[in-house]
Image (cartoon, rainbow, N blue to C red; front, side):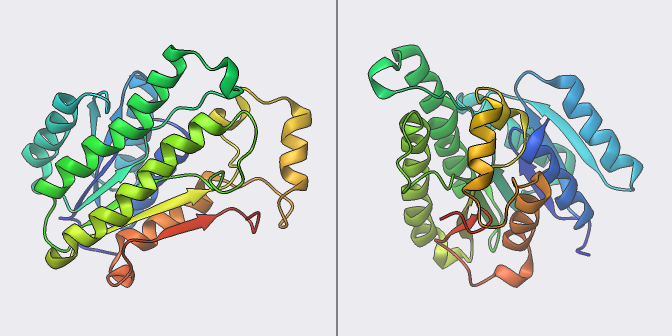
Length: 245
């Protein structure tokens, strides 16, 4: 258990993997800022769970695709808890579709949240996170598989990985680590939204460990990267996917 004067921001933390990351970091002793875009009630539920277990949590609305909202997110975190130690760029959206049929609207939406949002977080974090702090980005294990209908999502996350490697070198002199976690298929609303049961069954057959991931599987990896044990791990992409690739 860490000292409770350390602060973590988790974007897109109202549901799914982000919510579990927020709960895990609170359990690790962090004061947690739970960012959400639209799901205020869900974000409050996550915060209440943390508080009921003796932790400290702040709910903060903001659209990560807006640079002003990202700056305000850090402002609110600093006003309530002090300087930020850890940023988890978790907020993301997906839209399956063959590239020949992808609309400009879908392209712009995915890039705005997954790529521009992560960029806003990394840029703000690079300027405001405490020395020896942590920036943790969420990527995807789809990268490298080149699965039809997932090209747009994979492209947005591949760019995040490129910035992860670069920023790790830029912030290394300050002791700030920058890493990414690349989940495989995790049983969340985001996964089930556009997939039939047949597709889900096919995914499970493709995972050597024979099951979908759980949000807790990913949160534990983030916990490691946010903690003192990972102080010499930087510029890495850690795949958590049951051995799928």
